[in-house]
Image (cartoon, rainbow over all chains, first blue to last red):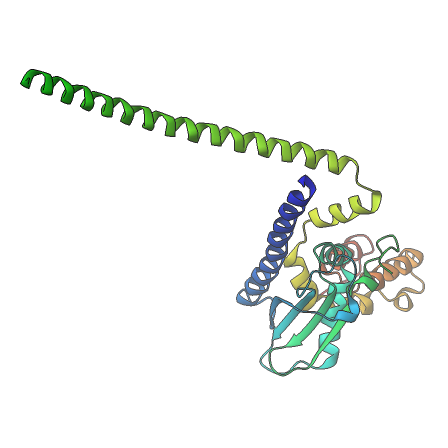
Amino acid sequence: MWYKIIEIIDWFGEMTERYKLIRDFNKAGKNAFIAGITPTLLEAKITNGDSNYRHQFSKFLGGGYRIKALSGRPLNREEMIEIGKIILENKELVRKLIALGWDTLEVHDNSGFNGCKWPLKDYANIGGYLN
Amino acid sequence: MNFLQIAIKDTIQQTNLIEKINSNSINIWHYIAFGEFLIILSLVFYIIYLKRRQTLSKFEKEILEAKNTDIDMDDLMLSINKSRELYKELSRKCHPDQHMNSEFQKEIEELFQEITKNKRNFQELVKLKDIAANKYNIKMN
């Protein structure tokens, strides 16, 4: 019974961590855009993700980490891949995303349904357990 | 008779007053007891949590550590938008072919490998740019 209660407390703790990560990303994106450092406004949000990319830490109906780019024009495929690769090469961020229950990284532009997605477990290298 | 009635009324009033006082004091003690109970409960949770952390497997500890790492989002934003330009500049200026007969030829080759390895990490590229400019006297923009 104690463990169930602790699991519930852990669940709430993880939810706050997840929203903190999203909030930090959005804040940094906004600041960089306002300061003129970046020409593109990036926004992160939680989506359902791809069920094929699930792992044992995936959150139900919340496994997708989507980055939306507002660039004033549609982003081409190379630009989306570049954004995705930069995120995926940041090992600490990928491990944190996996630990907090995300399984899919998605990069979309602000209009339309075009986008790219990657399974996070392929880029984590956590002891080989997830594969 | 009147005197008796007044006496009975007085006693009833007094007992009501005492009951009121008693009921208020009981409420206060209830709150204090409830607060103590919450404190004890939270301490018990904390002890169980600590014990559980001690018995975690290596993999679970790794996951917990990953959860607690701080990510520099400003650096990530710079990497997304600026690292490409910086990488292009560095790879052009620090290319080993441009320093064939230099005294630092080997070091510059290693530097170029580092630049290629960190092509999407803005913070690391800035550090490598400083090394190239200060240590090997490569002119940068």
